[in-house]
Length: 343
Ligand code: CP3
Image (tube, rainbow, N blue to C red; front, side, top):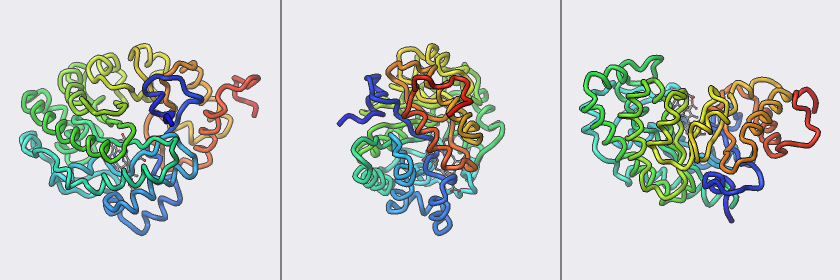
């Protein structure tokens, strides 16, 4: 059978818009919090039995069209010998650009547990569910490596790209090769789709993104044999460049730009998004109204994958996710009140 998510990314017609949610396996789910109370984050990620169970939790609840593997964008860096902790975001020693360039490639053996998780998820999910593998994009990983963790400004990266762009490009190339290997491992284990998360790319200016970040993202994804999604939230200033340089099948868009406007700037590609995660903190009518707005902006064109504009908030009531999924599956119902006031 053809999986809806895969078909949509190929821009083939589908019976209904596929949906999955970034961070769908996570802290808004009581069953996740229960498991995490017994295992720390890194143990949960690195133990296939636990990671498989967490990946399946939102599939059981909502029958999502994609099952995104429970891991972190930093997981392969740990496997490359970079020690870190999570609290809740990653914390590590700040690295120099040269140290990153010296990291070398990823040994697939060191991520054999992630491969086992992918294979276990593929055999456990329904046939119509696509398994989504993922990696962090080179610029985003470099941002964490240079800073030593999260940051409001990521000044270590933002000064490095001007101080020594050649050294930054060399470090990005090393990360691109390692993440390419990591994605290949996941595809070999059964991933049907991959997504490259470039969360912090948008901290940079358009020129630096186009000269440094996007070529590294392109190299990471080159030759990966399943539909590829590139997602750079907070980077509306680079949409045209993303489509021109990265060469993915699909592009994630956040809530900042209306879906139809983002789509016309991206061109002939699949588009994933873009409900504001804040909408899931409101109420049923508001959720249904805004789901309909996103679907209206997609206007039935082949190639739309429904998602949030970024990861789901941990305060989100799970019932609100169920309402969102139901609204997508009902699509546009005749007589539906476009004001969103009625049921
Ligand atoms: O359900 C899924 O989406 C799959 C699992 C997944 C996690 N992290 C689990 C996680 C995925 C795809 C990621 C990607 C990730 N990790 C990104 C890119 C996506 C994005 O949000 O832009 C980034 C930037 C990270 C780095 C990271 N890891 C941060 C900033 C944090 C803390 C903040 C947060 O949102 O929780 C983490 C920890 C983390 N990764 C948690 C989860 C479920 C929370 C861990 C916990 O305390 O239980």
